[in-house]
Structure formats: structure tokens, C-alpha cells
Amino acid sequence: MPASGQIFAANIARTFPVDWGALDSIQLYDNYAYLMTGGNGQFNSALPGNPANPTGDIQFNAAGVNFSFGVLQVWADILSGKNAGMTFDGPNDGSWNTRYNLQMGLYFSGDVIKD
Image (cartoon, rainbow, N blue to C red; front, side):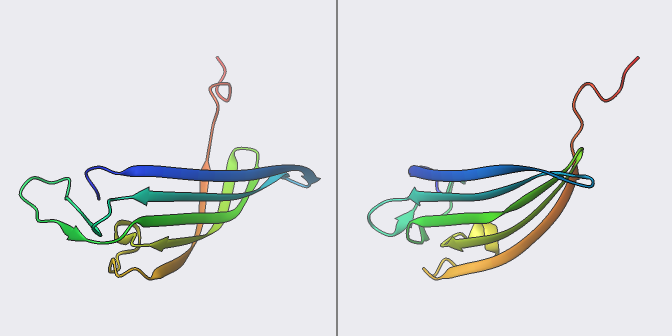
């Protein structure tokens, strides 16, 4: 992870309310981030005593869909990264790496439990 840099981000999303059984809404999204680490293709590690890590600028994109079933949320997305070894457990060799993600979570508001 770079100790410093400039980050740029662009995010777009659209939520569609639906009434299909338990499904309340569907949201499509695309989140992109670009971390400019420096002009020499290396960044200094955030950990003291570590040498410079060779890499180029870091890019990351998450595109997907969220299904909302009340408190149950389901996400299915495609994650793509360039020089994003901290995310993909791969080399920072300048190539794009992609993986697929599916996750579920329960989200409760403070109004769920009443006295």
C-alpha cells in the first residue's frame, strides 16, 4: 500500500424500486478509483524500513448489482484491478486482474427492536 499519492474516484449507481415478492429494489453500480503513486513507477511502503515497491499507478473497478430484500442485501459484482496486489493477491505487473464476488448481509436499523 502506498504511503502517499493522489486518488481520483468516479461512482455511478441507479436504484430501481420493484415489487416482486420479497424483493424491494435492485441497484446497478460502477465504482472506479485511480491512485496516482508517482512518476517513477515506485512508491515507498507505509511500513518503516521496507524498500520501495515497484509498481505503476493503481486502478480498481467494481461493477455489479445489489438486490434488497428488506434487511437481507445480496451483492453480485465483478472486481477488476491493475497493480492492485493488495486486493488480488497477485503481482503488481501492470496487467489487469479480475475476480467475481457474491456476498450477502443482514442490515438492521435501530427501529427493528422495540421495547
